[in-house]
Amino acid sequence: MSTTIFLQALLSGLTNGAIYALVAVGLTLVFGVMRIVNFAHGEFLMLAMYGGYLAFTFLGIDPILAVFLVAPVLMLMGYLLFDGLIRPALKVPEINQMAVTLGLSLLLQYLALVVFKADNLLVTQERSTASIWLGPVLIQMPQAIAALASIILLGLFYLTLRKTDLGLIMRVVSQSRDGAALSGIDISGTYRWAMAIGLGTLGIAGPLMVSALYVNPHVGQLFTLKAFVIVIVGGMGSFGGVLIGALLVGVAESIAASWLTASVAAAVPFALLILVMLLRPEGLVPAGGSR
Amino acid sequence: MLRRFLPALVPTLLAIAGFCFSLSDPYFMEIFIMVGLIGTVAVAWNLMAGFTGLVSLGHSLFFGIGAYTVAYGQVGFGLGPLVTWPIAALLALASALFIGLLCFRYGLRGYFFSIATLAFSEVAFLLVSATLWLGRSDGMMLPSSPETLRYLQFDHKWPYGLIIVGFLALTLFLSQAFLATRPGFYWRAIRDNEGAAEALGVPAMRYKLLAFGLSAVVTAIGGAIFANTFAFVDPRSTLGVELSIQLLVFGIIGGLGLLWGPLLGAALLIPAGELLRTYLGAGFHGVNIVAYALLMIVLALLLPQGLGGVLAARLRRRAPKKQAAAGKALAVEAAP
Image 1 (cartoon, each protein chain N blue to C red):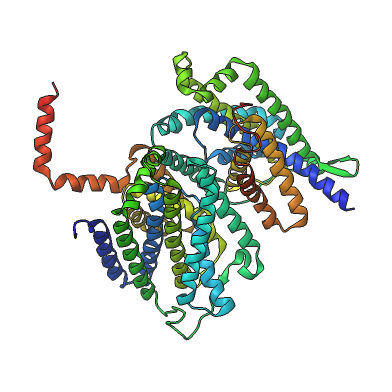
Image 2: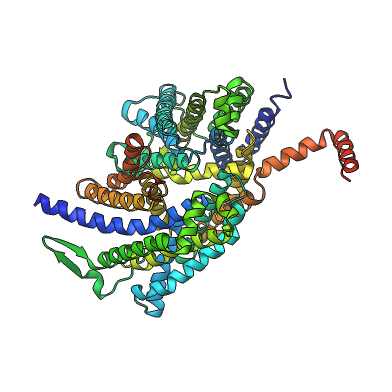
């Protein structure tokens, strides 16, 4: 009996972890390339979730198909965000950069509150209640779809980073900005693309998540914090680290949730961060090698 | 001597004036209390952020330690502020040193220091929200008692306003005096270039811990005063991220380079937020935060020195106007 509970917790932890990885990977990309931490990252996820919800409710578009609508919108937002806020923010001290993205996070949260009110919204379809049995444990259909999609996307993301010119350029810029500029690489252009892709991944994650998880104006904050934890645990900037960090956080959280109260379980990712800071300050997968 | 303490004296006199004005109406007094309390905590936060270059996003942890020590001390043991305030300060000091040691030893800097402090305060928030004897997320009410002075319980709000004026003045004067000492200069050296400061023999770790500890102690006293003033504590208002972010907002808007900058930010934004809320009504909950956020973004980008910085520059320019004019003429002559 206890083994079943454990396996169940492990499985749902891994599915959650896969989704977290997709959310955190965009944050790492933006930080790795531009050395700026976007505190509003989760708020864009929240917008993408609302996007998926609205597309389903008003246009009757299935969340899986809504991805093709929401992701380009989020990419465009990233593009505009770079020119509107991030480019000027690169010129001011770090604490002001922090204030800019924190301000953006508050702005989006409370604008969403004004527009959408504080209600919890969810896309419910026929398949929402369906589930798949894997031996003794089961997995909810929406979670399964989101996790599968995020695994495929993470693969695509990795290939882009490794095999394409754009990926090469982004890796170059993240290693040495000046060196890249001297080699004739368009730094602003690269930043713009990093921002667009970083938010674009959220445009894919959002609509898929909204059929598994309630969306409200404050849902993003939670994900921003978790993504930070994942990025630091994973060694601040490496792709492999994000994957491991995300799975670890997902599993730790869901195992804790099956034994402890919800509120204590929610503290587990942060406790994990503190543990890693104590024991392995370079992160689980040190950046540099696998960048 | 007087000149040196001007940055502490002028805000204190203004605070006393504000206090006297607020005596006319309990609603004003409530606003004054929030401005004085959160403003002073923001000044303490800025000793770290603006003067040592350590941006904490987890200061609500220390505020919460202060508030919950007072609340639990009274509910659980019947202790008054005379005992609970020093305990609160010690607890905050200990946790700041622990967190600081952990972060600095591993070289967490910039963003990562901020995020780590945020993580610590979030752990505290979640744990307190789950702890039965601390009232969970419902919070704790401080029982009323006839012993007015022993438990600092007054029928009116104004005595608390008076305590806060003292808290504010003490913090400003002590900080101003401290910034003129050797450790105060070390802080700024570390802020400007930690590597260079260390190369010149400044034990950066020790002075960063000092900044963290002092800032935490003042913040905890602020939290303790909060608990006594409102006779109620809950995780959202004393341990939540919102409080920590508020300190950053006040700092950015008032000016991080000045001791009184964050106080100015609080004095402008808290009443403005109240006004917005009163005039727009409850239906527009959150509009004041939208305005906060917009203001913060615009000022952080366009006016990195904050409103206080602009004000200070204007004041400084007015004093030696002749010299400045002469200097300008010289510069123009030299230019071509």
